[in-house]
Each structure stands twice: as C-alpha cells, then as structure tokens.
Image (cartoon, rainbow, N blue to C red; front, side, top):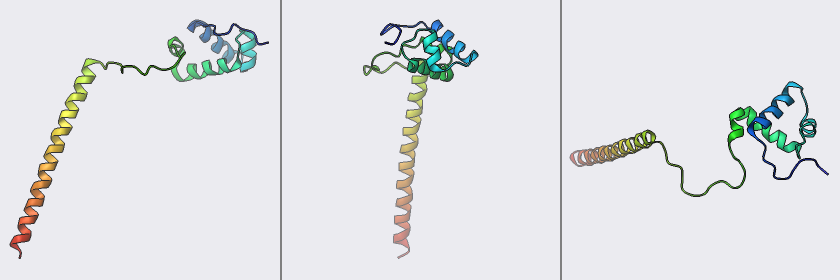
Length: 116
C-alpha cells in the first residue's frame, strides 16, 4: 500500500524543499516520493513543473478543486480606464472610416454620372 496520507496538504516550504533536494541529489520522481513519504511520484512531477514554470512562489497558489465560474475578477482601475479609452478611440476610428468610405463611394458615383 502506498505511503502518505490521502488528501494531505503540503506546505509551500515543504514542496520547495522536496524539489530542491531532488534536483541537488539528482533523484528520480519515485525515489523522491519514497524519501519524503509522498503518496504519488506524479505529485512530485507536478510540483517540479510548477517550480520550473512559476518558481517557488507558484507553490503558494491553491490549485485544488474546480476553477471558479462565478463573476470575473475586477481589473485594476487604471487598466479598466485604459481599455475603455481604447474602445472609444477604436469606435471613433471605425466611424471615421465608415464616413470616409461613404464619401469615396459618393465621389465615384458622381464621377461615373459626369463621364456619361
């Protein structure tokens, strides 16, 4: 039967120690799991992936359970203001281009009548 406690929560410091020991001593996933009494070597592999992509700070993020499907997070005020300003600018640009296209088409239509 595998060692370890089911649904055990490991501290970020413990996870960091496990991965750094594994790298320093060039241990495999299974050896590392056995040495630190972690239930699954797959868990060690996941911790290593997090460590390599996000650094030790990545261990502080809670990843258990389903992701939130509730209300979206609020953006910082400056970012929201910048996005709204960009939307307004793009709408104005879009309106300008529509008017320009209408004028060009009108001019072509008039020139078509004059040449006949």
